[in-house]
Image 1 (cartoon, rainbow, N blue to C red):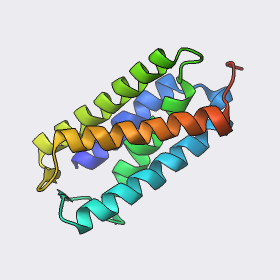
Image 2 (cartoon, rainbow, N blue to C red; image 1 turned 90 degrees about the horizontal axis):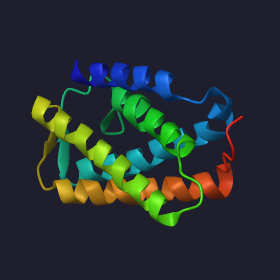
Image 3 (cartoon, one colour; image 1 turned 180 degrees about the horizontal axis):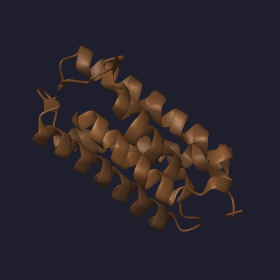
Length: 149
């Protein structure tokens, strides 16, 4: 049930914060976030780095509710709220989003549906930061959300 709860919370936050006029261009960021997450989770679980417990509906070693909840929605929102111009502001944004994602993982660990076996918070934060950096680059280079409609 925790995976479903996280899914619902993320979609509520998404509907509150999404910029509908930008959705058509930024939905690709959500899809890219899913591809990155599948790549990491599939291999990490295969190598025994961490375990995903009680996924309800499993898809490639992950919970479908995690994939379509936090991963998809945060990917879109991240690109929609990507700061323009200042590189330091972009770096701070990546740090903040990576920290939020890590905090969410820590909650899932405390609930018991995610279990680190040969993994750490530092590893997770590093992967999160790399993923958000890639999303930032794709968002700026290809999706180019530009000014709000």
